[in-house]
Length: 556
Image 1 (cartoon, rainbow, N blue to C red):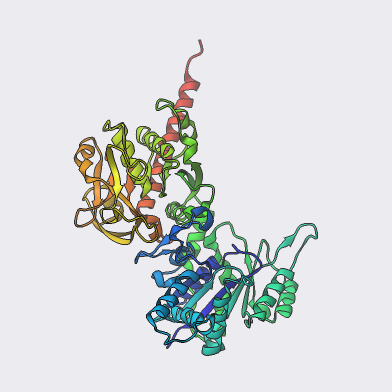
Image 2: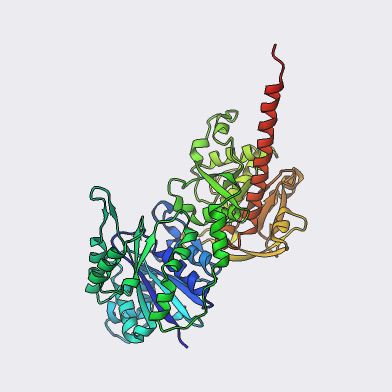
């Protein structure tokens, strides 16, 4: 049986949560025993988001096959078991690139290449490619209905309905029902106009996910159903929630999956959300809390580290802890004098410190200060990608005595290139797709922190970087107390470094956050949160002892 399709569009404004909505519907369908696939079309002209600023686009999510994709694919993988690849995220730029390549090759036999049928056919072919061997394929169209850029994609899904029929396709439209404080009521007009915009391009939505900050009254649902030509039960309250992991439960309460199956004429078993319900219970009923400082370059825009924050959350939820994250701007920790330790006041009181990935020289001095503080004060430290590289530089400078140690990315003329560019990429100046990307195997040293966390010595993790640890300095640094505990099977690339004498000091060249799920926390994040919580307990004990000593001290 060929797959059936659920097309997710958005209206009124952007950032309504189409990706989360699609992921949550996928989660509900999986809980009924169905196999799902998810796909995202982005209407911008970039071939992929790899070279876009994190401040503009947010995080770049990397798949196993090395595709640099939209952050919504992170939601898809966290909420479902779908295995995604570069075929699950396409942009207008990539679609046009494929068409122009075919045209130059002569595939169109001299025909005039047009948006219809050539662009729409390419889009439809991409949808069908990822829907093999699944029951339902969820397709999210990026942007907002009415945008010029998204019109070819909207037209393509209209044609899919025409070709496959109503029983094989449904349209889910995410819209906004705002609360107008001055009037003291919810307004449905934006939703009506959004549906009208969809109707103007030939699409009648089947289900409306109404984003709002409160539950919609029955009369309001009736009004929306009447003016938007949908069944009343298909007007769904997509209410704001404190945790994104509650969204599947909200949708289940509103019977979104039941409705989708009815419209698609599909039979499925009853949903089993017991594990998800237990997860949400732990989210809202933590036994304690843990505080983590993230010292980064793009902290002004949290979406730049979307998967990172979620992975930390998974580690905390797994141990029934509430995660408190503080975003620390790396540049704010910089000092002009090496002996100036005034930055330490900004890092006191945190249970753990994490330095995430990034590119460029900005903020590096602040990161090095944060790492030195964590190393010397025995605060649990987790460095990811750039965070591992800066940890190696800090160790070389302050432990090994190589004052000028640096990365050739930050200082090409440094006499001690602790970090340098990948051997294969020397002389390559184009930035797009020139990194070590996707899943690479890694062999762990027995009895290492990493091996104990994973419970095995052979792992595979996802990468996105251009620079590597220089093994010419391996003997010097390992002799001073650093331990290389993870390498590629051929021994070429260093993947993990640790300081055994430290309670928890680990840096990894890969991005473990991309493989963490709420019900399956990544081992490194789980252990980092565990170590941070233990540090919190020790710090509390020291504070209590200090207070008792002060109280018991005899008066003079």
